[in-house]
Amino acid sequence: MQTQLADVAQDEVSTLLRALAEQSEEYAFVFINAKGELVWWNDAAQTLFGSTREQVIGKHSSLIFTSEDKQRGIPQLEMSIALSDALAQDDRWHARADGSRFWSSGAMVALRNAKGELIGFGKLIRDRTKLKEQLELFREEARVAREMENNQKVGIATLAHEMRNVLAVFTHGIKLLRDEGATAERRQQLLDLMDEQTVLVNRLTEDLLDISRIGVGKLQLQVSEVILQEILEHTLAGASRRANDKSVQLQLLMPSAPIKIKGDLARLSQVVGNLLDNAIKYTPSGGRVWVKLTTEDPEAVIHVQDEGIGIPADMLSKIFDLFTQVETPASRQGLGIGLALVKELVSLHGGSVQARSSGEGKGSEFTVRLPM
Image (tube, rainbow, N blue to C red):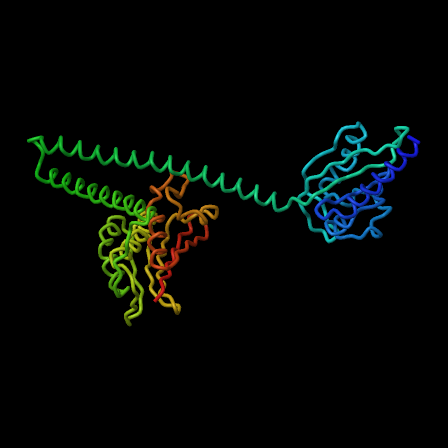
C-alpha cells in the first residue's frame, strides 16, 4: 500500500513539475542529455532563444552560448561544475538564433536516476537584460558623479590658487606703493595691474554667484526686445584690449538688417563675452577669432570660432560641465566656470549651445542658437 501511495505521489509530482516547466513564462527550462545535447525546452525558452524545440533537439547545448564563451570553454565548465554536485550558477550573455544577445541569470544542475547515474542536466535561465541595463546606468551615473566631484575639487583648488595669485599682486603692489622711491611710472603700472586683477576677481565672483542662483532657481531674466548686432559690437569692443595685448585679431561678420529677439541684454552680453574671452585666451599670439551672426529660421545663430588649442574629442560631451577644464600638454586651462554659465544662461533663453572641434591644436567653434 505504501509503495502504491509513493508511486501515486511521484506521478503527481512529475505532473506538477512538467506543468511548472511548460507554463512558466519568465523562466526558460532547458534539459540536456549526458552527451550535452538539447532534448527539450519549454515555451519560455523558445521565446527567449528564438528557436522551437524541434529546431534544437539533438544539437549541442553550446549553441546558446556566445562565441567568446565557447572559445573560453564555458559550456563544458558549467557541466563539470554541475557534475561535481555543485550548483553551476552565473550571470552571463547568451546568444539567440538571430545572433542577438541577452543578459541572463542561470543555474545548471546534474540530474541523476535512483541509482545515482547521470541522466542529463537541467538548466534554468531568466532574461535579466533590463536589470543589466539599469545596473550599467547606475554605474555610469556613479562614475559621472565621481568625476564631477573630482572636477569640483580640482576647480576649487585652482580657484584658491588663482585667488592667492591675486592677493600676491595686491600685497606686492601695496608694498611698492608705500615705497617712496618708486617712480610715478612704476606706481601707475602697479595700479593698472591691480585694476585688472580687481576686474578679474569681480567677474569670477559674479559668475560663481550666477551659477549658484541658477542652481536654486533665483536668477530671473529681464526680458526685452534686443538687437543682437548691438550686443556683439559692444562685447567685441570690450574685448578688443585683451585681444590686442595678445596680438589676436578679432573679426565680426553679421548681416546689416537688425536681428531682434526677446532676451536679457546683460545676460546675452555675458554669454558672448564668456565665449569671446575663452577664444582669446586659448588662441596663440597672431591667431584670429571670428564672431559670426546669422539666422536659421526660427533661430538666430551666433558662432564664435578661434584658432586656439582645440578640444579633445573625449571632452566635447562634458565641456559645459561645471569645473570641467580643457587639458593641454602643458597644463589644465581655466577654472571651468564660464562655459557652464553660458550653457545655463542660453537654456534660460530657450536656446542651446554646442561645441565643435577637429581636435587638439585645430581650434574650436561654439554655436549658440536662440529662438527669434
